[in-house]
Amino acid sequence: MGSSTSSFRSAFAMSNGLDPTAHK
Image (cartoon, rainbow, N blue to C red; front, side, top):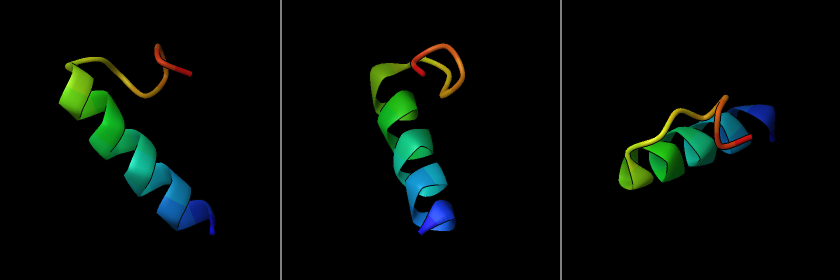
């Protein structure tokens, strides 16, 4: 589950052109 969330956040952040940490 953790891996899926990380991947989803990464893809979502990249899609928005933002960092997963900043989009927290």
